[in-house]
Image 1 (cartoon, rainbow, N blue to C red):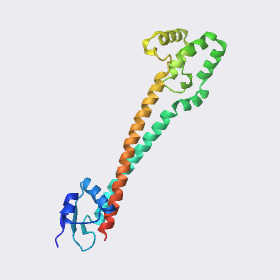
Image 2: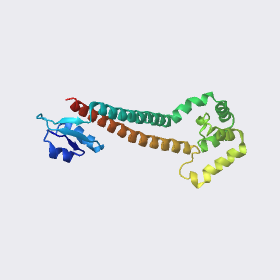
Image 3: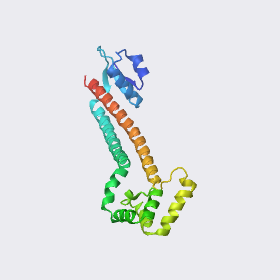
Image 4: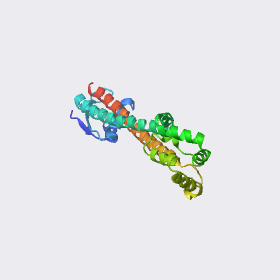
Amino acid sequence: MASNIISSMRAFDENFEVTKDERYQALEKYFIRGGVISAVKSGKPWPKLAYPSPMRIDVQIKELEELKDVYSKKNNTWKEKLSQAKTYHQRHQFKKFAEPLYWKHVAKTISDPDYKSDAGSVSLPVHLVADPKWKPMVKMFVDDLEYRKNLVETVQNSIVYKDDKKVGKYADILQDFRSEISTSKIDDLSKKVSKLEEEIKSLQLIKKWAKE
């Protein structure tokens, strides 16, 4: 008997009557991916699968596993970025102790009440002295009186700081933004990996069918 070329579940159902079990669901996913089969009635509960061959299915499985590996590696990268964003301040709380500038700040807060007041009024992010993005600002604040007073005035009077008198608030905003982006990427990639795992499992079931 000639085999039938089938590319949809509807066409399969028109040609064969089988139990809608796990294999049936696997075949459904295979068609959704654009797969094509060739099958012939065999007198058994399921028809004989002529195409794809086990070898051809192995090729498809390998392609999906390689793609899954790519997504998994990207996912791990974004997880690392998320971890870095969430622990950013905590890590810099330890890093600051290795910076001479931090200890200079500490010394000035002890010896200069006016400096201590200014640093407190702007919530100086001195714990970020090890971050190249923030170190120049902290250094200017510590070393330059005019810069310090101008910054204090800006924070106290500018509309930008109306609701938050914290000069380092943008460090928080940046890390929150990075966390949101990382979380979104992780969610998207996790879904892709999960979908590929389901497709691989489906192909493995079809491969088992092809060997019968």
